[in-house]
Image (cartoon, rainbow, N blue to C red; front, side, top):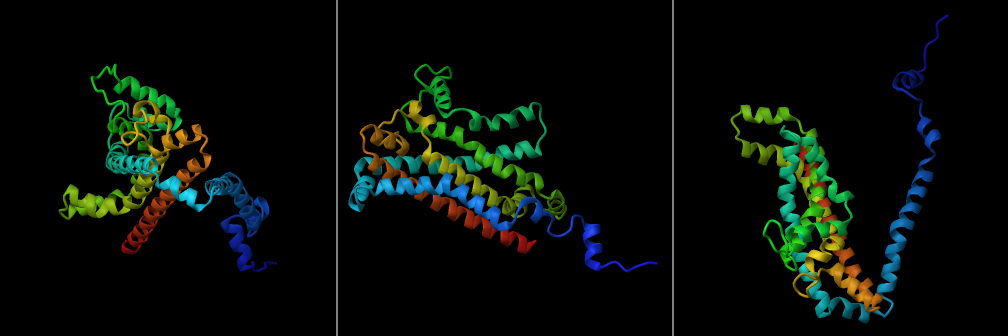
Length: 287
């Protein structure tokens, strides 16, 4: 005798595991959210709360004096000026490198692709030693940029390039090449195809990568400590100024300057990701 199958039972049998499978196997949503929130609080929020508490240990007047002193303002100026320039340069060359790795075939491509991640794995002080050996007083290439802003910029370019490349590369790999071919068949030149077809899809990842590169640059210490030299008003970035304050046992001032860098980094990342998210939604609606 045949019996009619229940529609829900048939759907669960044909589509895979029944409802509740993942819930029972991996725990409830509340449990996962609770564990993730606890871990985030311990690793991120509590340290941030600690540094905020320390920065206000001498009162708000001491906090304001610490972040508005001439030395602090000079370190902010040097840090932000160089970091913005580094982010803009890597925005262009990071896109170029990602394009070459995804669209072009050449000998040693896998080797180049692996080198991109080297700054992630290399200790930053080693990067500073490399820069000093290459661009220091005994430079084998005849370029001496130690204790200059160019030296700091080159060191920051080295450590921040992977952020843009690795943000853009997956998006380039997933782009539909048929749309580009259709635009070409309609008479569009390469620049028009890139500007109207490719760039809108890449914009969110480009902004995200540039934001990460900027945030890394304003907080970088190890890679610039030797090549920069911490010349006040010239190459002394805020991270080196913070180290100087700690050496003088001014932990409250060091925490105050750190808070400013954290706020700047968060605001830049938030703005860029908001712009990128809106651009992505606009691209989805248009497509």
